[in-house]
Image (cartoon, rainbow, N blue to C red):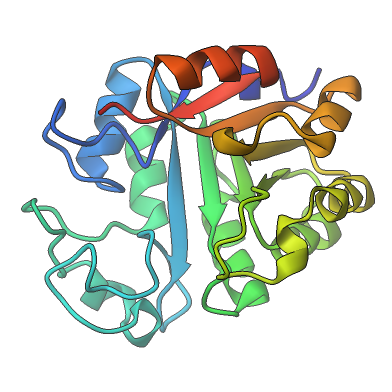
Length: 240
């Protein structure tokens, strides 16, 4: 199958970070550690004010950095000087991560739609991955982002990120497995990345019956591993 690399190696969630490694999430050192230990990795992408893809999870800077404010209000160069909490490192750009990884392990790019600029962030990611030689996939909770790549760059490997556990931060339809199944069909996504807590369900069963790889997040313990083994094709994991 053309996307068999999706199942080849487990993915470190936001890189190999935490007490075991001493690296913080979504940092260059966490990604390097994952690659050095033979894992792929997952990361989060947001947009800077000058339309550059930067790697950080929250659209607000305060939880993860020494600075306050919204990521979208800073230029990439300014963000590159903002220190990550618990580290001497700063916010990397997606381009920096790709250059460091250099195709050695596969990467899952979760494109965040929280800023509402679906086309802009998709264009920024495409600019960085267009000539990248390694295995890379884009994925998102937001169908609008997947649709952008399907319409404009159909060769890009695309996945839907999903859960049925409604936290109130997204439209309610996003949490409906029936709607997720519809999105998978209409956009012909290459894979789905589903919340381990909500496995199995009608959409993951549909995917597995139709040879659409099911990845699951975030696998943190032996019970999660057993559940993932039975209901998915690969894991996105964290060490605790």
